[in-house]
Length: 124
Image 1 (cartoon, rainbow, N blue to C red):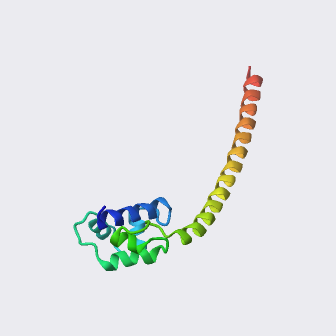
Image 2: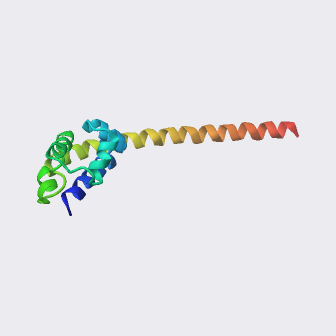
Image 3: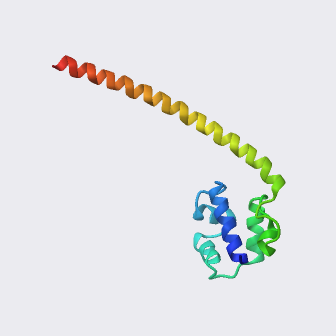
């Protein structure tokens, strides 16, 4: 895998892991225009040390050595573990909140269906 392919993989991971919402958001957070980021990731502009440093500084989980030499893993293990635990907790809380909302909405739908049925029965 080339250095460029590895940096693309890192950028995809940053979006997947929700450190950025999109390519545009990632570009902005790294201090680049979307078009500049696109040119870098498409190989139209050479991949610079400055860009690699910005990406690694943006997220401390990223293994700079892996980007440069493909040695080790893309993510640093120790830091990722702590962040992952916190991320899982946050996601679980969000799921619980969504489940409560869904339950409330189901009850509301059932209530409205009953009212509609009662209304239709009175009409006949």
